Image 1: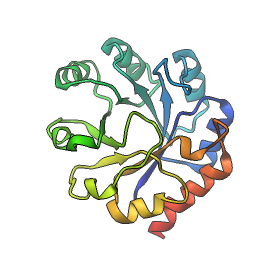
Image 2: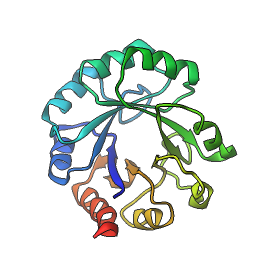
Image 3: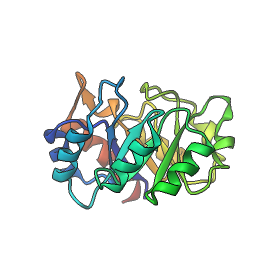
Image 4: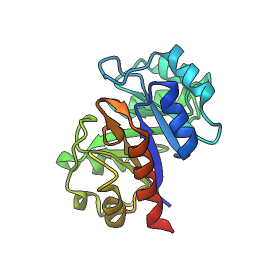
Length: 200
């Protein structure tokens, strides 16, 4: 079954929504330029309220390696998603500091997924851009054999089609479950139903 990641959670209400719907993952954005940014102290509070059955993923953009490792090893997050220009050396250094799961994000353009296949011990995430909520031609990822998270413009209305075409390991959504910049429970519920109905 394709797993679900609700990304960009910022409030205790968001956490309550997640605890009711049980996605496999939620995401906390630690990139200061993002409108969904949360500080580590706030993330710790959110993590404490989150069901232990749900994994918390920290989203970083070119963050200091030691900062990422500290948040992982402190248990504030269970996995790190690297959404910047982090290269093999960065990932290898981070891997020496923590054994927690890593996810490297790539843009689909220029078929950069071929590079992604060479990264060991790391999930990959395929997106249209830098978290800008746009879809891409899903057929470009059809031949990708490595397990991956699919992101980019997913909504309750189109996620079912994405799963039928690609059957990704997980689907990652943020703006597609928001109304006026805030997480919307009805959209989160509809998204979760659309994913899970494909496997009933």
